[in-house]
Image 1 (spheres, rainbow, N blue to C red):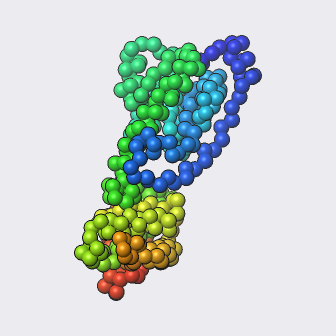
Image 2 (cartoon, rainbow, N blue to C red; image 1 turned 90 degrees about the horizontal axis):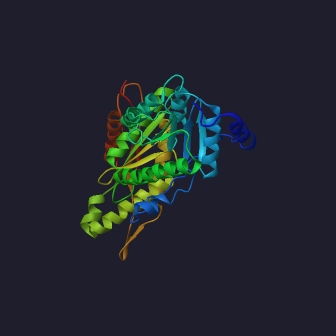
Image 3 (spheres, one colour; image 1 turned 45 degrees about the vertical axis):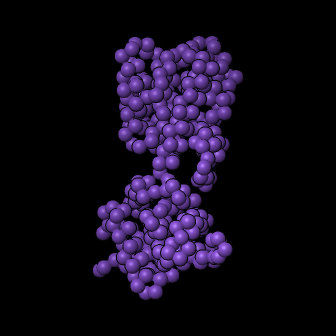
Length: 342
């Protein structure tokens, strides 16, 4: 159902237009310890992406123009199926969804969005329905707000702004919960979540996928000789150097203790070994200043590549761990590739 009708709508379309364009990729933002959630949220200044789903072209144009005028990026869908497809492909920060659309209705779209992510984007329903039961149904489906047509520019933008503000706080809390407190890398729980997603993607598209399991050599000696504060300094510096050696697409996490994991999409075993050797060189290149002395970082790395015998990321980790154990047994400060038994 449209937002406006007749001459006013035709005049608006004649004077205003908007063009969807691809959303640029996020640059990685380093985790800065000691910042408040509000400060962290200001680090990424990219405009929020809003998906507008409505079967009425006039409504899509008007709402899209208003949102673009408020500084948001906009993509649009004309039915529920297209909205869900775009949401999966573009991962918008917020959805404005008409309740009544061809194909999936707004409720179905909202429920699907909620079911597919642990941190789904907020959904605001656009509707001509004023009945309480319709609003309740929308909120029960997972929507955060409900706007009844017709509505004013100021109201719509204010509601979008409020929903995104709440999302930013939730995202900040989720980001903190996903990070290791010492190094700022993904913690084990988040690493496992990302690994499952990456493995599923590699499987779906039959693409290579590899894992590096890295262990800092003789780390216990660092703690015993220089103290745990020095050990923490070494771990933080190692984490930073691992990030410096990794691509934007790589997934880096602290596996536990002095062990780290790097997940490498689109990377076969040969390329993964080369990446591991580059990483070891970067780690050992410059000693870490600690107090009045210096500590050299050496690491052993086990490399494994996803194959048809594996069923979950734990199998990939186990294969990399076997290779890591062999690297240690052969003298440490080396890279070993796991070779599947035939």
